[in-house]
Length: 77
Image 1: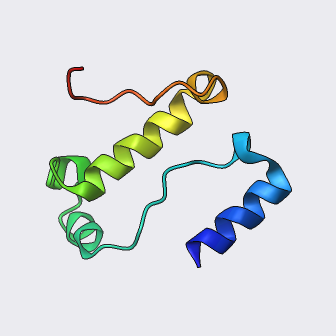
Image 2: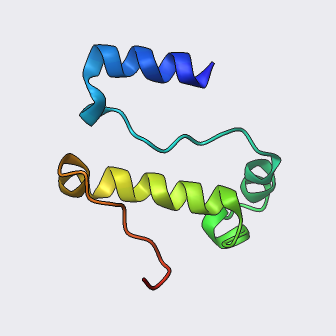
């Protein structure tokens, strides 16, 4: 389903206007919400936290995305 929706968005809006990072459903989000903590605080090493951080980087740094530069990560390169 995600692939179909993504393709429709790209066809309608253009690839530069559709985020590359997808956030799948995961129970860990429910636990973080119940604890009233951001996922990046509740489980900072989890895949869910990494995906949320990657999405935030896409939304905050549109100039990098428009030039097709990789999103920054917290790990040293």
